[in-house]
Length: 157
Image (cartoon, rainbow, N blue to C red; front, side, top):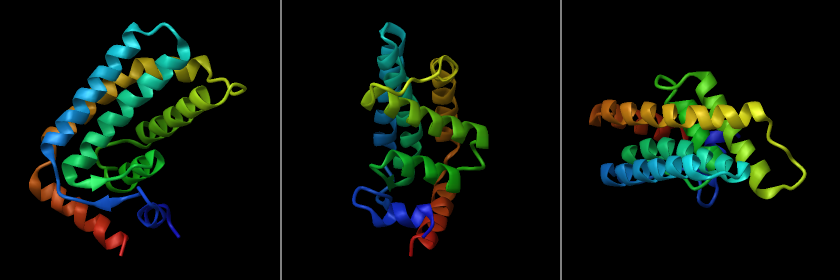
């Protein structure tokens, strides 16, 4: 079973709902607030967590604008990998996955260190990722949204 079908089969996984531009804007606001937390936090673990959430909320804003609901973070990233690859490079999507792993390692494990390189990359690139997602939100018109939803619907049948 491929990852998209696996995600669609899980509770809280990938489902198609009504597109919601207002909710997308709310997630952008959450991403901006998370970035502010990155700026004011001094604890590395919290900076990692808030930087990741800035990245995640930025990406999730795109999904809700298209009417895609997903509560499994790795599935959100896989959706972007499969259906938003014309907007994101492979490196950017790898960065989101690496950031998720860093957030999990720093938040849930005492014995797993996040490298300074990954930490610095997250803090540096989270604002750029938010700007990119805002730009994509503007480009996502109804025709493009319907095209992506159709591709997704065809995959999860």
